[in-house]
Image (tube, rainbow, N blue to C red; front, side):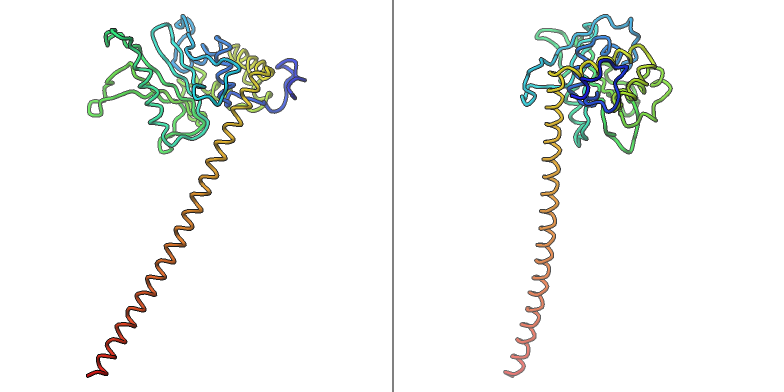
Length: 289
């Protein structure tokens, strides 16, 4: 492992083996360092640090779990201050039905009442998507907050139901408010691919320094590396299957087009033969007169 020669972040150089864009690394960093998770959460929800009394992770990864298991989930589900339930999802591959999927996740979060509890006790639910693609290309934006709204009067139907989206490919569209909460720096941390780039960001703030140190430390952890490598392999297989499927679809479409052309040509020949048969029949009728 090349990074074994790098004893500290200070002398780390070159390409980062596993960045925050690897969802296993992302989950590991956020669950292994509470300060980092708190910093990201404060930026995403526009909270001051003293407004966060507790963060309880509801689905921690146990190293050694089989990444192929259906129960292996890499979203981070957490309870904030025992009053808000939040799901943070990193999605690097474009999802054609992402808007439906994210709403299903949010609905599941919102259904958080225990048997016998009144509806008034339902906890606010937040689904926060960190995306490496633009979900609505006709409406590009860096960070958006989405709620249910009355379309006639434009008032919020329910303030406890929120879907936030951070588009990691739209950093240049960050607003002054986004920059105030340092969301643009967080996005650059996710997109950083070299240790040099990561260290430049680490100089901006102590929270970022701690985040970068955690990324470096976990890049040296063999169990975490195996998990990240397995995740990359799973993604590679998924991309290959998708590519092969698209090739098959294209090949079938081309064959269908050839068959359609041949059917059209045969139909034209049949029409020509029918016309000739009609002409012959007419000539035979004339001869018999």
